[in-house]
Image (tube, one colour):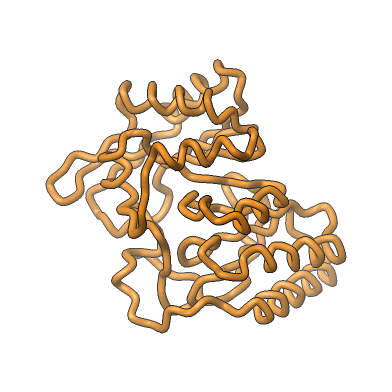
Length: 256
């Protein structure tokens, strides 16, 4: 079953893509809060959670992260990465830029070799403060699951003003200092076929990658329970074939 993260700081967990990861959740602990309502989200649907929907205060995030890093330092096992993800979209937090500033300082003091990663759906790139903050982290990981508007809306179910074309232009402002993350999947949702692995989909996606010129790309598929139960995982072999086409463009790509 889908599940929420019940703490501000959680883990560390062994991430498929990032190594030993200490997670940071800026979103509510009892409810999901996101600008997307993705049909594959491990946190479930936005409307399934009736708890209070408030952001975790900056001061509490600082205290929780400091405590976790101190404990890990005492145990002699520091994280490879501090990852902002959690119960929704982290860049929605009104103090996101200040929290990244705090995290950089804590990282430098307690775990100087750790990278700072942000997993984002790229819906807040119209905010200058979010862009500034993302330009300061080590792994600026931004999602785009389809370059076809109707397919993106079917998979991601945006709860905000969303345009694939606008997001594509916004991704270019990072001048390649970003990692593109894409979930590949198949199935059905509300009587409609879901499939972003067709040749048309992949060709448009590869064209967009050439325009964005990211430092790397992450392709992956379903690994946990999803709120839509009719989705099908794309197997490793097929993901690797997609990754090889990215590498042929001269862009580093991982598949898992």
